[in-house]
Length: 295
Ligand SMILES: Nc1nc2c(ncn2[C@@H]2O[C@H](COP(=O)(O)OP(=O)(O)OP(=O)(O)O)[C@@H](O)[C@H]2O)c(=O)[nH]1
Ligand SMILES: [Mg+2]
Image (tube, rainbow, N blue to C red; front, top):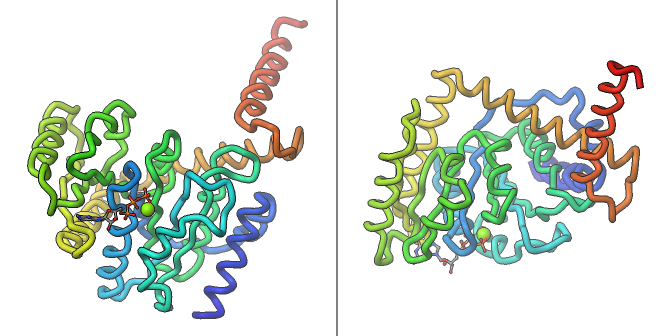
């Protein structure tokens, strides 16, 4: 396993550095259908502490866990997320746990789309579950829904989080609401306002449960894992896993395409991949349309 972990580390570095190489690495790899848990929420709600507590429970269940923490603050990978690494330190010597941090911005300046390939790589290795931690900072928080099979939205009392989150429209991507820091005052009112919000939102087949946790002591984390398992079962029994996978593959392809365009037309750090993608799509649309009008 130790050699595998070193090999895995090396492959991730290669994937992050070069999207073309990433496709070579993943080609022919047999991917396993495992749960990918997205953990998102604003800074400081206790995501890393929660992930650490989740790892502990999952390890007790005998599961091998891969964790990637996406860091919004640093443009460089590797040195990112020192705090998170420290919070998850007790698992560092555990052979059944792999922890990696990753910059949220990619080498080309856009969102770090190598997350898609990195998660696929984990699927190709012998893990039972993947956890992706992202800070709710704009696009990354919504993109997590394209990577994860179960999205946890972590909130904490006293942060005025509810309002902020509802504005960002992130509520819709939550499969499970986690009210962390349940040892602090304001927990019950936060739970009540979440319930009220769920009451008025359109009814879906899956009603996101609200789970209270104290990540720092581990309280409620076993219940949380149970709810995650229940959601994963729901995805499979309802067939929703298929539509999710289709949606995620489409997003992944968009990212690959964007990288291809940058590589062909620019391949330069200062190139804005999104702008280039839009411009290229516009240009091609015009070109194809013009054929019809004989221009
Ligand atoms: N009282 C209390 N404090 C907690 C709990 N969980 C985490 N904390 C504390 O909250 C602070 C932030 O925790 P982190 O786990 O780093 O939060 P985070 O969401 O990962 O933060 P970022 O990665 O910076 O977005 C730390 O000081 C934790 O010890 C909890 O359940 N109760
Ligand atoms: Mg963190």
